[in-house]
Image 1: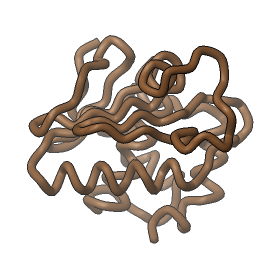
Image 2: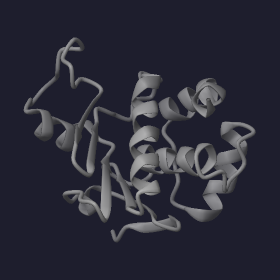
Image 3: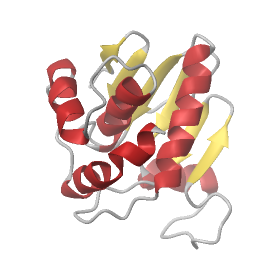
Image 4: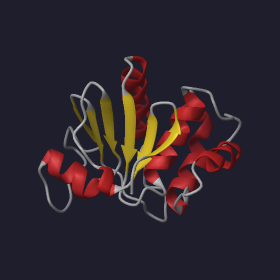
Amino acid sequence: MQPVPVFERVLVGDLSCCRAGNAQMAVVHACKSPCHQRAVGYTRSLDASHPEYLCRLQPGELFLNLIDPPLPLFKIESFRQFLLFAARHYDAGATLLIHCNQGESRAPSLAMLFLACYLRVIPQDSFSVAAAAFTLLYPAYRPGQGIRQFLTQNWQALLR
């Protein structure tokens, strides 16, 4: 899959789009396996007390420890770290490439959140309203049950 532009300088992709980030293209790796595991250096699981349990930040890259479970096991801090990283790099003129394993759930959910929360180019009213608008930009959007439930429950908190 080629990265799909969802807005000016915001791209969504799958694992085949994984690459190193730099000043021109900041990359968000929204997958535990293999990206977060490789970046932090573990194979099975990581103790929740590890300082890089939720994310690892490198120049031009953010590695998020995200899986796509049927239940919402996400931490709001992961999404806040993403928004800070994305805003900083976007404001500096970089293109954002956000990828996950299949390019259907985690990465597009993050892109949608950025478009609604930071760029304000899609409605912020609720997750469902934002998702409906985002699907017009990215028809392959298929949020998993866990991320759908997490974003529905935490949408307003993430907009702050």
